[in-house]
Amino acid sequence: GLSSPVVSGAPVYETPLIERGSVILGGTQQEFGFALRQQYFHKSVMLLLQHDDAFTRGIILNRPSAMELDGWRVWFGGDVAEGGLFHGNGRAGGTREIVCLHSLTSDAATRLSMPVIRGVQYTTLEGAQALVASGEAER
Image (tube, rainbow, N blue to C red; front, side):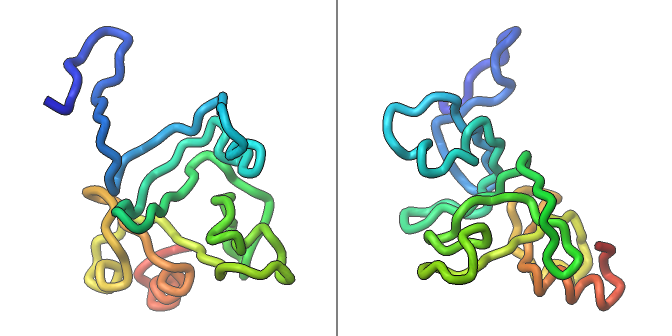
C-alpha cells in the first residue's frame, strides 16, 4: 500500500503522493541552485493548497514577517511567478497573491473559499476582508 505502518520513532503517516492538504517539509540541503535563489524554503513547513499536473500552490506556515498590508499581518510565502509581494513594485512578472487560511463553516465563507483539508479552507485577501466586514470573521 501507500501508507507505512506505525513504528516507534517513524512518521505516523507517510506517502509518496503529493496532493492538496499535504504538509511538506523544506530540506536543509540542496544539490542544485534552487535553494540559493529561494532560501525561504530552507527548513520550511508548507501546506499544499493546490497540486495538479499544471501547477502547485502552497503556503509556508512557519515564516512570519513584520510586514502588514492594510492592517493584516503577512506571513512570508516566497515569490509568486517571479513577481510576488517581496520583489518590490518595480519588478516585472506575476501578480501579488495573498491567501488567508481559516476554519469558518458559514455559507458565506464556503462560497468565498476553496477547501484544503477537512476543517481548513483558504480565501483571497479580498474574501477575508469581505468576511470581516460582514461580521462572519474577525481579523
